[in-house]
Length: 317
Image (tube, rainbow, N blue to C red; front, side, top):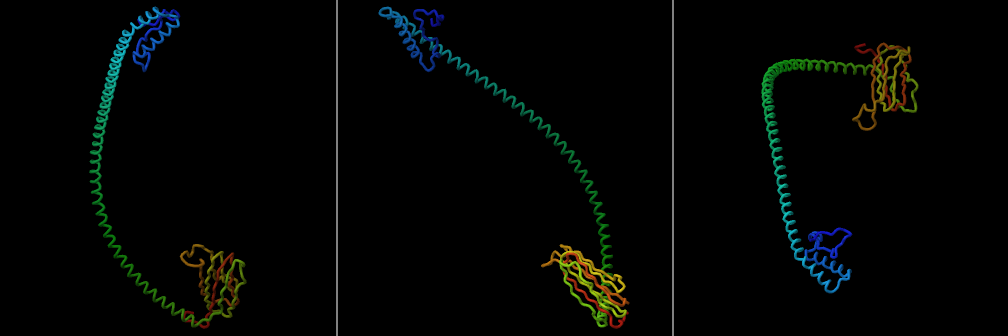
């Protein structure tokens, strides 16, 4: 009754009610019917239907209304039932998928538990093996400790022996110190005698600067064979300095060489110096003019020197 007529061959009343409510989304079956009825009336009027023919056509068209509404309601009911079945089926499928996923999860968890159990068994076996190993090591350590105790007892005995030897050495050292003190006293006594039997023939202080690399030799005369005592003290804060002592024959009797070392006196305050000393005793000296030569290279500092000679024989001469 509600089928569509073939295209290009319309019947006299080719506007038919819709086949289903869903053809007009958002409309009730009655609203859909009213739309079709209005279209049908418009068609009748366009064909020129009037009077009895028009009323008959409308009456025939209205007879289809209840059947259409009933059919649409039934279709909607069947569709709703089907949707509910489909929804329930999807729900059951979703539940089954959840069950399957949960079952797979449980299987995975069980596999992990089994793997963890095997792992724990392996760890326990390793621990047992390690414990046995540690026991063996401890036994070796105990044996080594007993050995070390025996060695320590030997070392203690050796140490007591060394302490006894050290005490003997300390006693010997104190004895040597006493002898040295006697020698020092004797030396001071001789030095005093030397000072009483000598006279100074040269005292000189010289300032070095970077402007001059040398100076004239310092000379002093020795008229007779005697004993000379020569003392030189030098302090420089840059460059190099060389002090040389020559006898009248040009033979070098002694020298003092200094090279500035910046870190030679780190803890002192003020200018940092490199220092040196020369003490020379010359017996049975050559007679004539002696020379003390000073050579310097870019050197700043000062040199103090003194020369004394014996004026009468001492007890050691």
